[in-house]
Amino acid sequence: MSIHDQSPSTAVERALSILEGVAQRRDGLTNSEISRKLGMPKSSASYILRALERRGYLRRQQETGKYRLGLKVLSLSRDVLAGFDTGEVARPVLRGLVERTHLTTHLAILDHGEAVYIEKVDAPGFIKMDTWVGRRMFVHSTSVGKSLVAHLPKEDVEAIIREHGLKKRTPKTITTPSRFFTELEKVRVQGYAVDDEENSLGARCVGAPVFDPLGQVEAAVGVSGTISQVDDSNLPKIVELVKEAARKISRQLARSTVMGPA
Image (cartoon, rainbow, N blue to C red):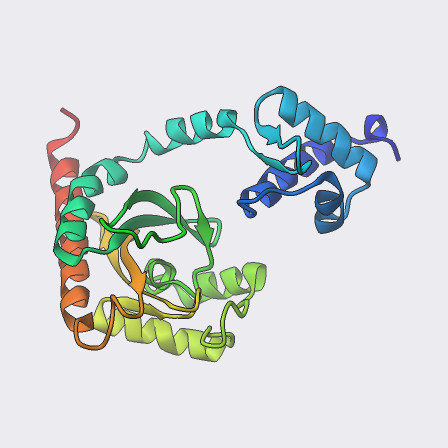
């Protein structure tokens, strides 16, 4: 079937799949890689890629032939993120958390069963975490992900597992539903979550949930560092600072809701 014979819905689905696939690979994907990864004819992929490139949603590197996200996507994401009052409320709190922990901080929300970073404040120094605003993360292997789903009904978590699975990111990743539910119970009781090299070897992260005025989880605050930066000696202090930051954002969200827009 040629691209012209496709139904409009098929073409749209393929275009969105291409954008999502490219977004998951920071170094980009070639036409052939996209065709194999998404299981679509190379001719169809080529047609859609050219259209997305013309509109600025993708850009092609001449030397490698790989497609990466274009600036048009960035402009759209800015418009979307501008609508998240939570990010604006959290930004100064995240900066303060960086000053006290010297670690990179993030704010994440739950979107279609994945944790998505909507704010990031880099730590000072040469060590930089390979994260960015808009990055989508598995909930089972990240501290912010665990924090976001720990208070969901069990059936909602089961639906996320069915859709996304429990992919083994490292040898330390939780990969069975029973272990994951046990972990979430622990998160609910202690009020925070830890990713102990579960998503990336050499990295340790601490997260805590942010609640809206109705007591529902709105977002999650997280700090990320190397295992030497977040070790057994300073982990308790970092945990308390992250929980304090999450509580502060929750209080400010409640206050802004009561006061209303300025």
